[in-house]
Amino acid sequence: VNDRILNAQLRGKIMSADEAAALIPSGVNVGMSGFTGAGYPKVVPAALAKRILDANLRGQRFKISVWTGASTAPELDGALAMVDGIEMRLPYQSDPTCRKRINAGEMEYIDIHLSHVAQFVWGGFLGKLDIAVVEVAGVTEDGLLIPSSSVGNNKTWLDQADKIILEVNAWQNPALEGMHDIYYGTALPPHRKPIPILKAADRIGIPYYRVDLDKVIAVVETNHPDRNTPFSPPDENSRRIAGHILEFLQHEVKKGRLPENLLPLQSGVGNVANAVMAGLRDGPFENLTAYTEVLQDGMLELIRCGKLTCASATSFSLSPDALTELNANLKDFKNKILLRPQEISNHPEVIRRLGVIAMNGLIEADIYGNVNSTHIMGTSIMNGIGGSGDFARNAFISIFMTPSSAKGGTISCIVPMASHVDHTEHDVQVIVTEQGLADLRGLSPKQRARVIIENCAHPNFKPALREYFERALRYSPGKHTPHLLDEAFTFLPNWMANKAAREAWRDDSLVQA
Ligand code: 0RQ
Image (cartoon, rainbow, N blue to C red):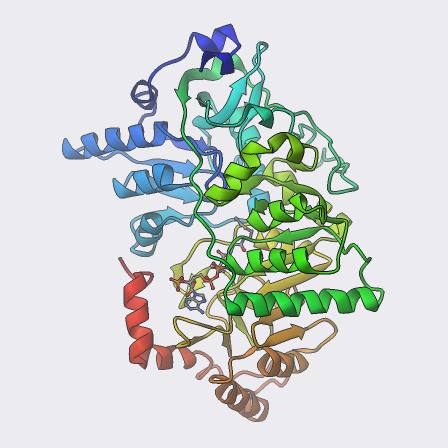
């Protein structure tokens, strides 16, 4: 692997994962690379988990706090959560063991907007960052670091940490060099300057991370693939949701409210998001652009077929097949894709300026348009807000999408009052389910409720929602956002009383470990 580590000083610090993990003591804050299964350290976290397990067996408590870009992989979150080695986790996770521990009250979790993480650290709000563990694709002769398949918060970790452990992964494609745009112009107020991005593809930084070589305490060589999970092909519901969104976008173009090539697209990950991308591939729009957080299979396909001319993101989130395709043709994709730090990919200023069309998933939406993206039954975390808030509030059009019901049709995703709110009624402009689309722009709360119930709710739940709304109109003390507070959550106990729903809950262990 040594041709990946061209700097002599760093070559002198090469050691094994176990030796590197031995340099991480209990009680420290560790900033790790990694964003949706891409670019996370592959071996040091597992070696650390082993060390933690050994300490626990000797009756010693050993925990660290783990800060990342976003979700990682079983080798990081899974391995450390399994041995109960995480005191505090932020800012986004989707690991089943982490989730269980958080919901069982065994692990603290801070769910913050992804664009906020770096400035929280610069500002010292989260405490001192002791150690950074960052995967890179290589080191240049003069000690610049070649980023790997995600950028996330790495620039900040490298700048802020007292000590740095690097994993140099020979599996990462050497052609990644040059694809990144690392911006060093950020500052804390009152010294901030405009972020000079005027188009999605604008480059404003350099393709490398700078690092103080004296802070590097270990360099570990690896040769491990990113672990990303395959997407299931779009199901009927996803195809219908995608169809409604495409029809809406065409309508907006016809009305002259969107240009013919739309505006830069942001799309979350998952089945529905992928179906929308597949729909765009077969749809009428050309010369599309993307200013997004993760680049998923559907977007790669849009680039391949020439419909998407450029994509700015902070990470790849690809299935194994798409990853193989990307790596085989990286040279062709390279001039159309750039990866930025997440404080820039998700920057409110840039998202507002470019006029992004944001498309994200939800867990439940209420009849007034408040959206819950993160909590089950108002108390258990699913994943986290991720970048959805960064995009939703600042987008030109903010779309939220979901099947109208969950858990085999036993739970309505449209409810009287959301049991937790991530995106308020003020940030949600369009809600789409397989039933239809509710365009909430320009509507008052009562008007929104009618449109959401009629267009989006599942027919099995529509009568109950209508009835709730009509009675709320009559008996609510305030008639602006009518609610019956003693009844607003009775949908939940009803689901819980429903045997099928109860069993579905128990199965997925979201309620309690
Ligand atoms: O669980 O598969 O066990 O049945 O939640 O739901 O419908 O498969 O949708 O994968 O798009 O996830 C909001 C969680 C949606 C995701 C959320 C259950 C459902 C299923 C997943 P099962 P679906 P998705 C940029 C944008 C926040 C971060 C974000 C998310 C599981 O989109 O994490 O947007 N968003 N980032 O059954 C009980 C309900 C439910 C429910 C769904 N009402 N009650 N369970 N489920 N609705 C990307 C990044 O930030 C990285």
